[in-house]
Image 1 (tube, rainbow, N blue to C red):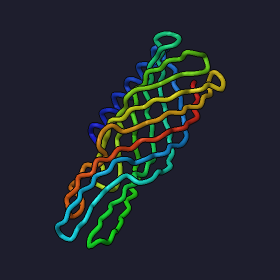
Image 2 (cartoon, rainbow, N blue to C red):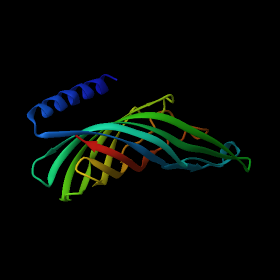
Image 3 (cartoon, one colour):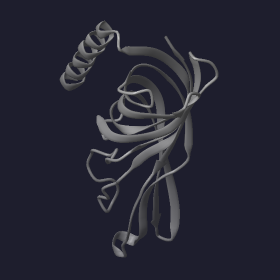
Image 4 (cartoon, rainbow, N blue to C red):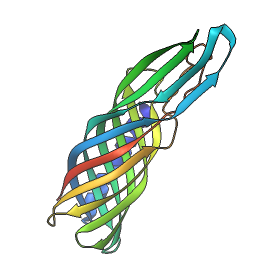
Length: 207
């Protein structure tokens, strides 16, 4: 939490300073995201009457995105953007145990609120189109203690301007670090490795 507050504080100072220079344009956006949870951990074991045990990402979830950003263009075509977004995501995973030749399943749906801070590089080959890509840090809040409190992510997408101020943003975002940060699960003490990824569609307004 301290790291999150410090990051937000420093980002706020940067936003204020940048706006004061007059070289920055700022904007807001809102939309939806789809989250896929990927990854699989399994083992095959003959002891304890266990034939196999597995944990895997399973299914997609829908959530919202709201946020704000600052654009700085070094030239007419090349610039950078700092964003601060709030997202809702649900990480869907399944635990499977085959014991005494009988399979059983347990599903987990970990609903989370994400504070996402991407730093994106902008390239505008045409007036109406902007390509964007870059890394981000995502702070995760969820009730399940075994979900990591943060992850490093990557973002890439395209913006299409309907007019000089209004645009549609379509991007794909993914986590690069393990979402699981807890003890082993099940009889075989499996250590899951999960990641989240998926598209975001937002409508934004540039002031």
